[in-house]
Amino acid sequence: MQPVLEIINLRKSFGTELVIDDLSLEVPVHTATALIGASGSGKSTLLRCINLLESIDDGRIKLDGIEISDPEIDQDEIRRKLGMVFQSFNLFPHMTVRENIELSPIKVQKKSREEAHQIADQLLKRFDLLDKAEQYPDRLSGGQQQRVAIIRSLAVNPRVLLLDEVTSALDPVLVNEVLSIVRDLKGDGMTMILATHEMGFATQVADQVCYLESGKIIERGTPSQVIENPTHPKTRDFINRVHQAGRL
Image: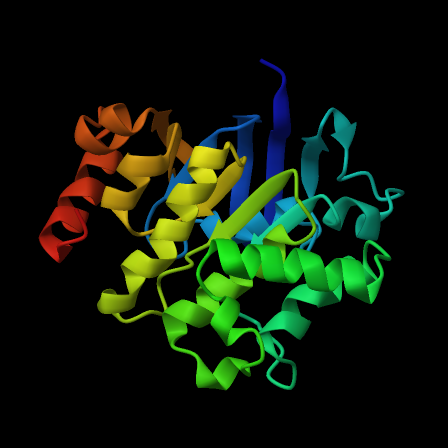
């Protein structure tokens, strides 16, 4: 199966600190890839490099066979094909929920306000948030804000959805309402890459799991291989620490 996304020998440094170290990864279409590892292992930086929010030092990134890491590429055109959801929501506080969702279809895809309105309401209705359409983000719970952030990224119908620790800023009670929307997207066949500390969730939704340490993929495989039966000593140590912290 032709991968929708290919990362080839990627390197990224911040000053003298090497954050991504000769990393390669293929993401087949309609699959979910979970990135696991301790804070500082390179998961978020990798997502930001894929979305062209960070420049890379070496290597290549391809989307549908096109090298998007080429400095001559139209980055705005590429970002129209990638959706990214941050752990801090990043909703515009002065806009209503509906206006937040309409913004990209109008500004990026040049759709009419009527078309964007229809897209927003269809997504809000699907994920049981239509009654919040005229609310401002600060009137919503953290879980509702994160669900709106995910919906906003879906409004442009991305080829790949990037999810960066989307539950880490939430009270544990609110985590499940965000994870449920990701499960639904998995059922729809959305291609996703998610950085997560929720091992149980990764086990449920991921087709492949990659354990990162010091910017390298130390171990990769199915959830049953990497999370339930890791073979690398560093992966086993990490999973044991996760067990002790109660995230499995």
